Image (tube, rainbow, N blue to C red):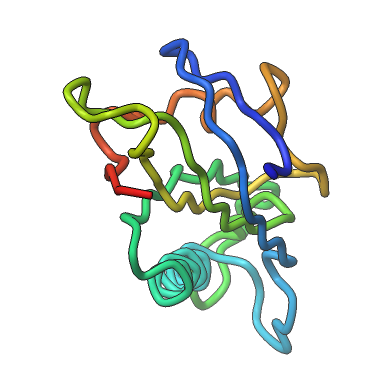
Length: 143
């Protein structure tokens, strides 16, 4: 059973089968959000996704970054990621047309950030998430 379905802009429907959400800045004890910290957080989330879902490729939807204060500190200006970090396991029909649709599916693990604590669904999902190039990124597998 899927948690939700997302309609990609390509017309393909994908199913979200597992979702892990966390605070983008949870556990940050000192410092401030800036490019070096954010880059480290993004890489860490990608590594976590790769370890957790090791049998599928991992794709990062590049996060938006806001600059609410141009005053530069020791590590540059304040740079803020969306509040919620997400890792999702997605499944869909096989990419390769020659594969038996009964026996094969495709899978992709996606890392993204979003502003709200909602499960992405349908055509209301963030446009960056809906623009995933599934046919290029996902991997077919046999059931």
